[in-house]
Length: 132
Ligand SMILES: [Zn+2]
Image 1 (cartoon, rainbow, N blue to C red):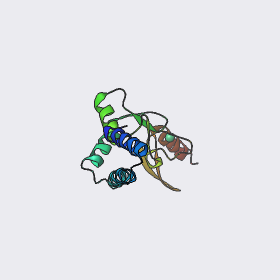
Image 2 (image 1 turned 120 degrees about the horizontal axis):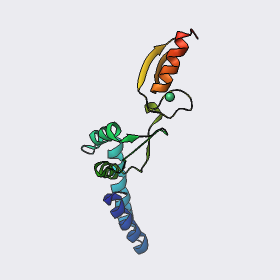
Image 3 (image 1 turned 135 degrees about the vertical axis):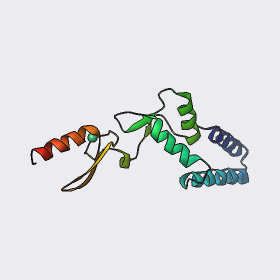
Image 4 (image 1 turned 180 degrees about the horizontal axis):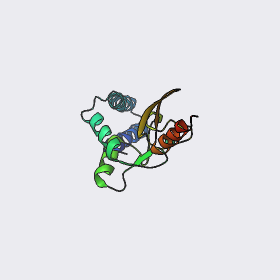
């Protein structure tokens, strides 16, 4: 959790103990505003940071990225408030059912455009060569 998240939780705890309803509302409003800004990519640099992390973080075969213990990536995950490993959206993964590899190829087929990992690109090419 980020320092912001930890500070907000501490304040939330104090507000609950003291029963300060206005403080609770204020903290909730601050957290909601921050969450909305994150979702809309309005926090300066967050979108660019996410793009860099997706490009440079280590990828595994479970559809996740991780820091590999690199402190710069650990810091970026902290800023983004992402757990490690972080799950990739399905749109970044091979379209072969059950495959959790990241997309590395895109190619037209008779049934539509496919986006697959290298292994399933080769399989699809071999099937095409056999005329299947
Ligand atoms: Zn695949």
